[in-house]
Every structure is written in C-alpha cells, then in structure tokens.
Amino acid sequence: LQFEFPEHFWWGSSSSATQMEGGAYKDGKGANIWDYWYETEPDRFHHGIGPTQASQFYEKYREDIQLMKATGHNSFRFSISWSRMFAKGVGEVNPKAVSFYNNVINELIEHGIEPFVNLYHFDMPLDMQKIGGWENRDVVKFYVNYAKTCFELFGDRVKKWFTHNEPIVPVECGYLYGHHYPALCDFQKAVQVAYHSMLASAEAIRVYKQLWQDGKIGIIINLTPSYARCAHPEDIKAANIADLLFNRSFLDPSVKGRYPVELVEFLRNHNFLPSFEQEDLKTIKENTIDLLGINYYQPRRIKAKEHIPNPNAPFMPEQFFDYYEMPGRKMNPHRGWEIYEKGIYDILINVKNNYGNIECFISENGMGVENEQRFIDDDGCIHDDYRIDFIKGHLRWVHKAIEEGVNVKGYHLWTFMDNWSWLNAYKNRYGLVSVDLNRDGARKVKKSGHWFSKLAENNGF
Ligand code: BGP
Image (cartoon, rainbow, N blue to C red):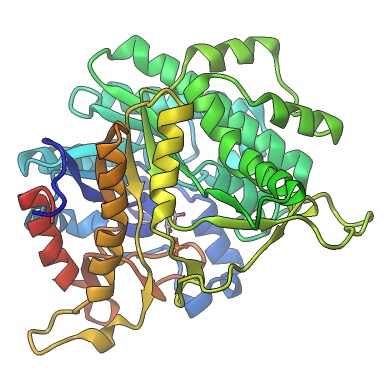
C-alpha cells in the first residue's frame, strides 16, 4: 500500500433526506420548502424532476444498506427530515417517521455501519418557512425541540450527531442568489438567517450534552479555501473578505465559540449586524462542537474588484471581490467546478494550525458526471475510472495532512447512490451505485463502488 490510513478510519458516504428518501407525502410527512416549491413553481426545476420520489430510500433502505456493506462502508451519514418527524415543524411527533428512522439506524448497526446523523440539510418545513424560517427567532426554539426529540429517541444508538450541513448554503442560495426558496436577495435577512442557524446549532449542542455524555456532536461546513490571484495586497484583502463571509462565519463560532472580530467590524461598518441578545453570545461561546465535518468540492479564486460597483445595486458579497479564472485550472466540465485536490490539504492544515487541531473528517467530496450510461461496459456496470482518480487524488492529500499531524478521522464520499440534486435533479450523478430512473430506481454498483470496498478493506490504496 502506498497510502495507508490510521486504524479505524471512517470509510463511507454522505447523503440527505430530501435528496434520497422520496416518499415526500407518505406516512404523515409534511411538506418542506422543496416539496412546496416543486408543486408551485415546477418550471424552476430543471429536467422536470422534483424531490417527490427521489431515489426511493424510504422504500428501499434495506437493499441500500446491504449495498453500503458491499461497498465497504463502516459509517454512513444521512439526515433526518424535520418535516417527516413533525409535519408542521412542531407539535406531535409522527410515529411512522420514528419507526422509519429507527429501522434505518438499526439496520445500519446490524450491518456494522455506524450511523452519522445530521439534523438539517436545507429542508425547512413549509410551516416553519411560512413564519419566516431561520429569519424568525422562534424557529430556533422549534428546531431545538425537534433536535431534542431526535436525541431522546435515537441517541442511545447514534453517537455522532451534526446540527447542520453547510449552513452557509441556505443563506447564500435562499437569501442572496435566488437558487433556493425563498429566493430573496436581501443581505440583512441573509445575516439574520446565518446568525439564527448558528445560535440553533449552539442551543442544540447544549441540549445534547445534557442528555448524553458518550457521543459527539458537531457541524458540517463546506469550506472553500479562498486563494488570492497574487500577493498584491488588494487581492489578498479581497480573498480575506470572501473567507470571512463564506468560511469563517460558521467555522469560527462553531469551533472557537466566537465570531471573527473582522467579520463583526465588516458587518457593523456596513450596518448589517443581526439582531441578537447578549445571552446568545454566551450560548455560542459555551457550546462549541466536538467534531468538525468538512465538505470540500472546490476552491474560490479571488481577485480585487476591477470596477466600482453600482451604488444602487443591492448589497452583495461580490461588491468586495471578483472571481478569477486561474489559467490552466482543472475543471469538472459537468458541474462547472474546479478540481483542485490540494485544497483539501490546505483546509486541513488550517484546521490544525488555527482551530486547535479539532477532531475532523471529510464529510463530503465527490464528482458529479452527466450521462454516465455511456461508460457502461459488457459487465453492465458503469466504469467510472474518473471518479476513482478523483477520490485518490484527494485522498493523497488527506494522507499527507494526517502524516503532518492533522486529526482527521475519516472520508465520506458524496454520495452513496445517485440522488436528486437541488438545482440539477438527476443530471449529474455522484454515486458509487447507479440508480436507473427508467427501471423503478434499480441499483447497480459502479466500478468505483467495487474499488471503494477494496479501499476500505485495505484501509488505503
Ligand atoms: C453539497 C450539498 C449536497 C450535494 C452536493 C453536490 O453542497 O451538501 O447536498 O448536493 O453539494 O452538489 P450538487 O448536487 O449541486 O451538484
């Protein structure tokens, strides 16, 4: 083995409820913002597919967990759907949801796969959104009630919990760029939403620690290393602002229990401080995470602004920097994202040097590819060598980070099986296992899935 990983390394994949469960209206589940948006504005959804049926994990979870075993998983991250547990976000817990998640958890454990459970993956219950979603401080309270219910019901068996996946995404996509519901462009609201999601995370951590002492609770953050075009001070300044807004806005309070002074100053100077209570800062300070999940897909390449922004345009982060297309960069043409493997190492070293070397793992990393059917070989399986190369390319850097002392405990690929994506439905496939939508979602392990099982078995490659 050229790259051997530490003992008990977590090999597996990550997923989310809305993207894989389906059963959007089954067994008492309430609508979330995605179900609602698809119903009311289907034209927004590319390729005509919404989340209603997704990859049918709700029905096929037993078969899927067997395939997880077959592809070498010793751990698997999924999210609980808040609107399945509480149709309206609050009220009576739905007993059918409880038995579904109990079944999934038990089935995973019986197959030797540790469940990693995330509580919030972009899927606000519709009734919670109707009262403002994360903009409304009461929603923090309702979320904590939901989190507490999950800890009580499943915490005897689930020992790795996450309060959010990529909390910056609902902020930017929902409140700045219009990709997610409610599709607003309002920096003040975006800041409030970000702040309340952070507060909700800290409150949930507090409740968890009161209930259980033998598990870990963390957050999953998408970190996009912010590289300046060159050492020119204006480029560096621009890259720092992007880093503050998109990475440190959640990373610092989650790990260090405080917001970066520069971020607070930036918001204050532009009159965008959120409304908050003094007591909250104590809550955030006292309830930091045990475990950091890092999602990594691509870096941000930043240069200083070349043109003075229109003073009448709505306030946006991009008034402070421009994106820069580095010549010669490697791209994933399907997703339009740069592939820069060393970015994963830079993130990990930063976590070691500046975030107390907190226990962490790669909680998402993966490659979406269009029309993978063209890679089907005589054996009927998709030969996705590009995905194997992609994983290896990143794992080499993770390995180097481990050699240099970073406390990284695992690697979860996005994702286990092809799933529905927020913006692109089933256009880009990410799975180790393919899902054939024309054959009732039939599953077939791809070449990468077979390779992944060897990777896990050998604990390296
Ligand atoms: C992450 C999300 C996932 C997933 C992934 C791939 O940001 O946590 O939910 O979707 O990105 O992105 P996409 O599906 O947009 O190609």
